Amino acid sequence: MAAKVDIGAAIPPATTPVSPAGPNDASFPGWVEEGPGDPSLLQLEPEHVISLAGKTAIVSGAARGIGAACAQAFAEHGAAVVLADILEEQCAETARRIAEATGVDTMAVRADVSDEEDCAALLDACTDRFGRCDILLNNAGIIVQGSILDATVEDFDRVLAVNLRGTFLLGRAVARHMVESGTRGTIINMSSTNAVVTIPDQLPYAASKGGVAQMTRAMAMALAPHDIRVNAIGPGTILTDMLKVVIANDEARRTILSRTPMGRIGDPSEVASVAVFLASRYASYLTGETIYPDGGRLSLNYTVPVREDDAGVPGSQ
Ligand SMILES: NC(=O)c1ccc[n+]([C@@H]2O[C@H](COP(=O)([O-])OP(=O)(O)OC[C@H]3O[C@@H](n4cnc5c(N)ncnc54)[C@H](O)[C@@H]3O)[C@@H](O)[C@H]2O)c1
Image (tube, rainbow, N blue to C red; front, side):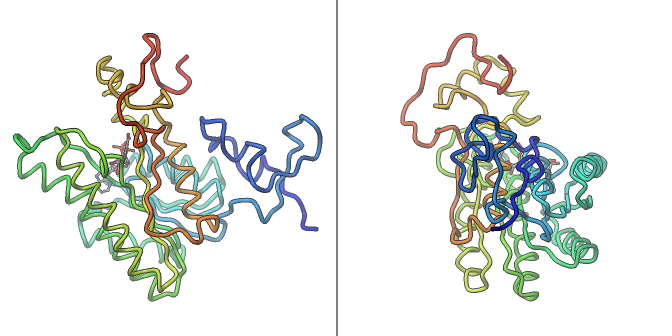
């Protein structure tokens, strides 16, 4: 029988999702209970461990927020990670922190995903250093407020340039590299619940994320014959720097929670765990899909009650 792996070493606690269901849940496939009631004695067979060892991942928009959490989760599962962002110093600092925490090789590259040359240079930097790119997470994204009545052309173009054109440019560069090098890789695009449902004053953002969802399907169809899988993640409301400002407003917070059956804002690690799954062999027959870590929002027709004292933020009570 194959040797068993200590779960603590295989999946470090930093990636443990806030939700109780996850790799530390004894119902997870592959758990072998060695002793009654003592979780430290639970062990995994190596073939059931999600490992990205030997893989190299590029993550755009990785300086902070969801991108940083995904870069960290990829590294914790053994992948070398190239972190790309326009925030050069913060990106370098995040890459340093992840390398220190995981012992995995990381690299930070300043790249604007809306710029074709930057995307080419980012891929070159990755292949020069690591010789390959197996995983791309197209995560960089921006929001600018504006409805059909007041959005400016400049704001519309800016959001589409980063969220949609950027996903296309970096996706195309990496897809071509994967096809030319015979890499059976995987591409993950960051969409949003706004690809399906929306609010009036985020028209450019909603249009861009709807485009990302559909581009994901078109990419998946073109790359399936090359054994390259393309999927998307469509988060609901996730606690990143951007969102902390929004939920500081009591009315906005209550509106968000009233549309979130699980009654809380999501944590970036809960998006990262989906990214790890999609990048892994556990998703080997999955392509052209969007997975929505949204606390149930897309299944909710109306609203749910919000408790007066509920901050809705994981760990705030
Ligand atoms: N936070 C949420 O609730 C939420 C929900 C659904 C989808 N998303 C999506 O998740 C992704 C990450 O969002 P976040 O909440 O972590 O936001 P964030 O603003 O914290 O992080 C986005 C990162 O992208 C970088 N970036 C912006 N423009 C760039 C460009 N042109 N080139 C390279 N990098 C660029 C930023 O510098 C930043 O580091 C986005 O695509 C966003 O649309 C977020």
